[in-house]
Amino acid sequence: MSDTPFEIQAEIIKRLPVRSLIRFQSVSKAWKFHIDGSDFIACYKGQQHLLVSYHYYIVELEQKYVSIVDDDTFPQHKVFLSIHPLVKMLKHAKILAISNGLLCLHGDYREGCDGPFSGTARVVIWNPFIRKAVEVVVRHMASGTYSSTVLGFGVCRETNDAKIVKITLTDKENITTYDIPWKVDVFTLGTGAWRGLYGNLPRKSITFSSSINIVVDGVLYWLADDTITQEDRRRRYNMIISFDLTCLNFEEVKLPDSLTHKHPLDFSMYKLKESLVMLEHGVEANNRFTTIWKMEDGVPKSFTKLFTIGIDTLSALVKGFTKDDKPILERVKRYDGYFVSWLVYEPYSKHINNLGISGFSRPSFVYTYMETLLLLDHPDFIVYDNGKRYVSK
Image (cartoon, rainbow, N blue to C red; front, side, top):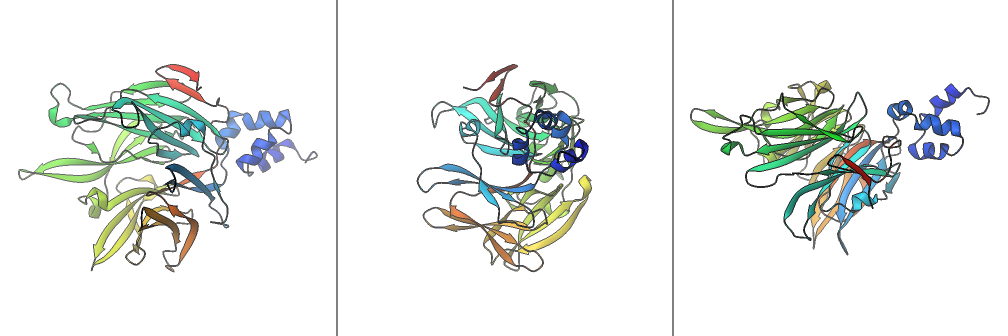
C-alpha cells in the first residue's frame, strides 16, 4: 500500500475490525497518530455484535459474556470475552446499558457478602475489544422505604462522551418540604466531574419501574408509571421517561394503548437496530403470544406493530434481536437448576435455529452493540471518586 495515497489508505482502514486497527498502531508512528486521533476514534464504527450475558454455575457462580458477529455468517463467529479486572471486582454486577460499543456495569459495596448496603456503588465503563475500562464511584445511593436511586448510562451523540445519570427519588407520599422529589446528577467522563440538574425534571407523581435503561441515538429510556385520580379512584398507568444526553432534558413518552394499564411483568423494552421496541406479552384463546411494537424514528407517541410471535409451543422468552430483525429467544428448562439455550426465530417462516450456546445458568440478557475505539485515548484502570482521579490497585 506504499504507493497508495494516505487518504485512501485511511478510508480503507476504517472498515477494519478493532483488533486489526490495534495491530496497525505498531506498524508506524503515522498510523498510530492517525488511529489515536480524536476524529478517527469518533467516526469509527466497526462490526455489529450480539452480546449474550449469563451466569454459569455448575461448580461456582461465574459471569459469562459471549460475543457473536452479527453479519451474514451469524451465528458462526462467537467468542467468550476476557473480563476486565475492574469488572471482576464488582459485587452483584449487572449491565446497566450498552451504548456506542461501551458496556456499563454497576455493582455495590457491602460489608461482607451479606452485609448492609453501604450507600456507595461502583460503575465500570468497559470497551471489551480494546480491553480498557474505567471506574466511577457513585456515592449517596439511596435504597430504602422512603427513597431510591436509579442510574442511567449512554454516549452523547454530539460529543461522543460517555455519561452517567444518577436520579434519586424521595418518597412522594411523605414530601413536606419539596414540590419535586427528584435529585438529578450527571457525570461526564471527559471532565471527570458530576453536574447537578435543577430544571425540567419529571412530575413528582412519576415512579421508575425499572433501573435498566435503553439507549438510542444518545437518548436514554426508562420504564415508569404515574398515578392519577379519576372518580375518587387512583389508577396507575405505564409510560416511558426519556433523557437526552445532549440537551439534558427529560420527556414523557406515551405507550401504545394496549400497554398503558398492563402489569409491569406483561411488557418489556428492548432496542432493535437504532429504534426502541416494546414487547407485549399476553394470552389469547389460551395461547401465549408476544407482540413487538416499534417507536418510529424516535418520535414519541408513534408506535407501530411489527409482528406477533406465538410462543406457547416454544416455551421461550424474547431476549433481543439480530440486525435483520430476527428475535433471539431464551428457552429455559428446569432441572436441578435452569438449563438455558438460545434460539433465533424467523418471524415469517417461523423457522427456529439454535444459537449454539447453552448450559446450566440463570436467566440471561442479550444486547446489540458495535465495535468502537472509544476509551482508546483514555488511560486504563482509572478510578473517578468524588472529584479525585487515581489508578486502581
